[in-house]
Image (cartoon, rainbow, N blue to C red; front, top):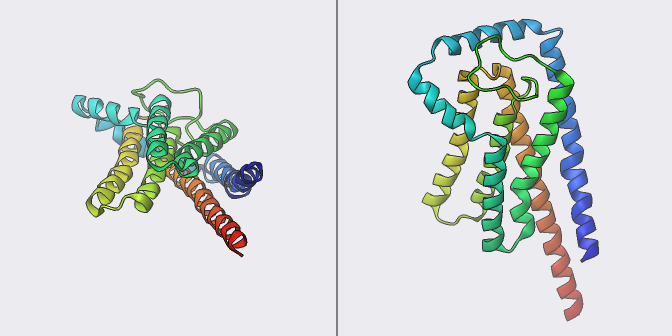
Length: 233
């Protein structure tokens, strides 16, 4: 058992954390390009933020406030904890159940390190939310929502047998991060490239977490079959 746990940790390091370092480097590189040699992008995106600012209405202010909260840290963590508990109860597979937690943890680590490294200022518009103590690039709300719900979608595609329910869950998991993305742009929290890179960060982290699970599931299955074969032989 200890050997299996060591292999789980080693594979997590090589298949998720290691690649995550590369993802962080790519994101930081993009951020430095946007705030440096490609600063013209920054100026063009200011006009996009201004357009969202001019389009605000009381109705959409209220709607986007709800959508934005879907990506709040406390909501992401609470949703992850509840769904993980349900998955563990239903499947008794701790690796399968841990995928969302690994995805959002990896995403959050990359986001925090990248945003403090790049330090991009937020759009020059009137924000509708208090700015968190991080810079604009990349979007943490969008990255967290994408990582969480993309991991849910991957797990749903694998385990939900009823076609209509599987499609419904996947559609919901695709929609929610997009709503968060629109809300963060509308409410003046981010530039367009901030949310695009946030989506990419979330998708990659979900994929890395799920890839770790699939590899460990195959390895554990092969190990179990080998032990049975040896015992029978």
